[in-house]
Length: 176
Image (cartoon, rainbow, N blue to C red; front, top):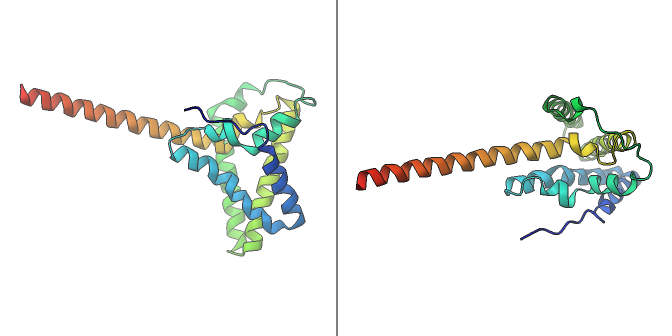
């Protein structure tokens, strides 16, 4: 069954997030949803469906940057594993440091998430203007993480299937 895409309107969530967070930065805590939803889908075996069907950031970039984008291709190095791994490690490190400095204070955690989401959103917009509108999606740490999870889960399924086939062959040999 094919899932319906919500990309035509899911941008409303990211705009709502920023409006609410600017009015009261404690709404920044909602940023945790943007970070956990893709992981949830990946762990449920849905791979990168969040990126293609739900992602509010990707929806916003695709909808609003098309007319102002220079439509250049991102450099090849930017699409490689090394760049994606570096960005993922840098972002995890920055978020971790920010959470440590928050010391469990709800307001500080919420502001940290708001700042984290805001800075990556600005980078995404800049990339979308300089390159193609959804260029951020090629290096997005959440998309990359879900891809890694899917790959790991697929490898596990293959190993399980291989072991099952091997045990079936062993059982057939015992019967014969």
